[in-house]
Length: 335
Image (cartoon, rainbow, N blue to C red; front, side, top):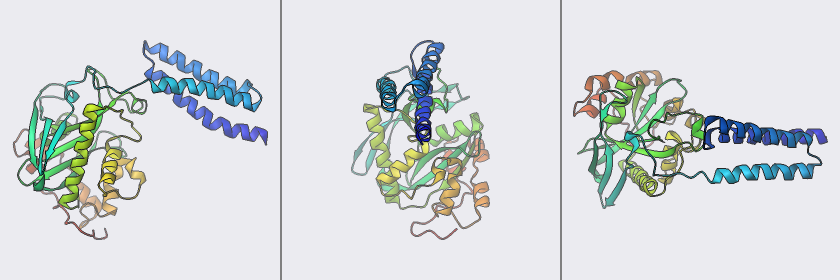
């Protein structure tokens, strides 16, 4: 029985030690070998404590000390807005709201010649919140069908759509790593942009498969959602925080905003495996359900339309040609 209890204790201890070793590997400052050496030493110390320190009270105390040192070091890693940022995430957007008027600063509208060759253009745009007609969702796939990048875009009756993408804020020359995204490697960044920037970058230069779905919902809910996004963008401009690939990413962030405005639905595994998020929305009636899901998905692929539209001023209108209309608010029909 005692060995069984110790075995149960060892499982969470070793899992935490493995997480700590990875954190040390990625986040210890200095040459690459230093972090790996410290990580190996830390894991070896934890394993030695489990195997050779007795009795249980002394073992527990030694483990508490080892993990205490680890978490003390971890707490010293702080997010910052003061780094040598990649140009495309150099300027955090922020907004001012007065009645129905939103003035949004640092809206990105880059002109791309390739993924890495572009003309920078940052704008201040004014939006009439009373003219919001609804929100749309983009799903962009770059590899596995299980994982996609999600982007919300707001449509206005009198202005081009405003797209906002929750992303990592990378430093100049830094590449994205899905594993490092769990270990305070990147700050959280909201890209507020013209769709010609965010969507054309993915369809024309990254070769991603992009789908566009019109979301059911009242304009008032879409407005509240946008205002909640702006509040977070203003907070990040003043107080940065880290991106987390598990709990603070492009899709969980959308759900948090929806919770804030009373639009969230029950938790679903497809919030994490978000490549199947459109299937979840279909089952919930949040997107068009007048045709089979497979047909809807095929009709929602906008890659060819986006490439044909390219730099056209009416890019947003052209990528929506042929899409099912936005479902009317109210109780959704059963799919």
